[in-house]
Image (cartoon, rainbow, N blue to C red; front, top):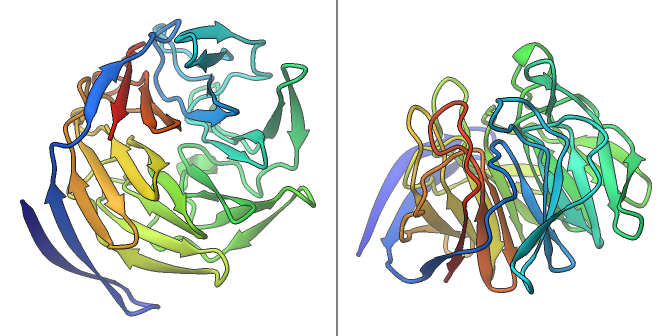
Length: 311
């Protein structure tokens, strides 16, 4: 079943109109994997050399943590590594050139944005400093694009939403700014396909269905077909050139599971997330998508559930 809707929305500077095209599909299967060692929300997840890392988050005491957990799919088990250097939540992760990067996030007290960037040394189970973000930011999104890391969205000091995007060059350990993101928002997600980053959903005073594509080579943004649903606090992962988006919040938690095909500029609605939640970690291992932890209720709430989608 297919439905299409032209939203009549454009980016004025580019003159591009986004039209939503949606397909509904029941393909794919959900299963479960070993639970997180503890319930956590406001986490990110990333896969490095076939193992998943989850860093920081908010625990059942509604406090920021320093814990670092690693999942090995071969044994379906989690292990705890040395603690992260600081307490952190709402912190995006990115993997580039066989290295895992942590990018800003919020630190106590409350939701204080930070600019710290660290890279993980697997051999020593240690964290190494890199150049700070150009401005502190939390609840942003990030992806590796064409040999760079691109960080978009989020809030800075005094809760101000940031339009600046930050681009990192690992060869020089330097950041620069790119063209501002057209729609200011936090709690968004991002994925890269080819040399294009897609900034998806998020919220400001309300949830967005907005999808905007950033062309790193030409330093320009363009509107793309909006999500079938409006969601902030969602997560995503890229598999087979498609972007899978799951979960979200505000005012309730979402079971939504929707896949974006950048080549066709089309969305497909897939079988719902078994455990609706927000602030969750999403990553891939092989041909499977792992959806980890998050908040099963709006606001402060935590789960240790890990669910796996096989397309």
